[in-house]
Length: 400
Image (tube, rainbow, N blue to C red; front, side):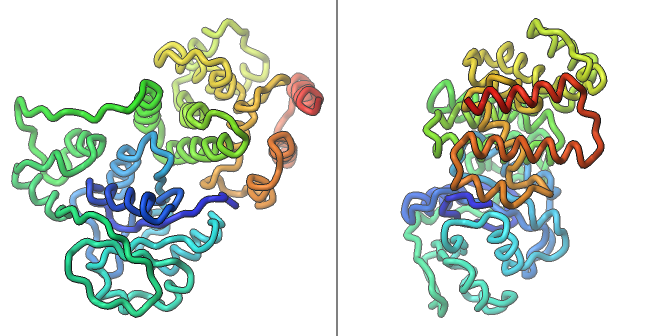
């Protein structure tokens, strides 16, 4: 998937993610001019014991919640999916193959790891595959014999281990982690957390109403869906953001529609039907046969009623991301494309992902639409007469 982005990888246990991690990632973006930092939580590091006090899902959710609404950051659960011991060289190869970054990806290392780097699996190959970024974690730094970039970041004296110890010892720790991570720790009683009565800590407000709405929706999506479905939703939002930037649309609208498009995907049938039909339309024969198709209409209704989103392009992009429409606006086409070929989807034709950085929007949209129809036919799924007629209308209308 050619992402036309300069990407940096930040690996670690993130147990839990803390303000030092995010500050360091910010420095990579600001000082070295990377476009996006991808956090990759380890299932188990070769040189460390298994993470304590939180499951891999807990760590993933804390990280996801902490970067919600900020497209400069993303995360990838490839090492957790692989399970077992994770070797950086293997992760790099997998990352480069899937993301096809613009040039070598950056690999962020704290200078506290310099002394043990030669003990890593294939350190020379790592140095060839990535642009190594040495960040300051401590003042003293040993010489590093491989090509690298030195990051002049602020040293923040905090570690995940010290935070876990403070939580377990009922000491003050809440200012050391992002607010969203703090809430998860407290809700799940992680690391031996014990509630303290009347101990309130201020939240972090979004910069604008739009940003606050995106953050609210993203957190609701994360809590409402299976985590793998949430990963898909966030990757859809990120690709929609990138495509909006490329094609001159409002990237925040793309992100909002992308993160919300599957909001009702796991809703019970009765509630799903009632919510979807609140848009004033009837339930088609295909929707009666496949009730799950109503999740798109339901999400559009919910986004309007619960979050006050009235922008017609956003609502249409959510409403038509599954069925399409004979009169789709550019934003709707972008979300349709992003939903079908985002980075975590398996079995996507590599040709479609290559079109992301080369084709115009209509060419990209029609290629994805044609591929979707071909896949449905190959699975011998019944395309009703009405569905066939709709797809034909989509082609004719959008080719004008």
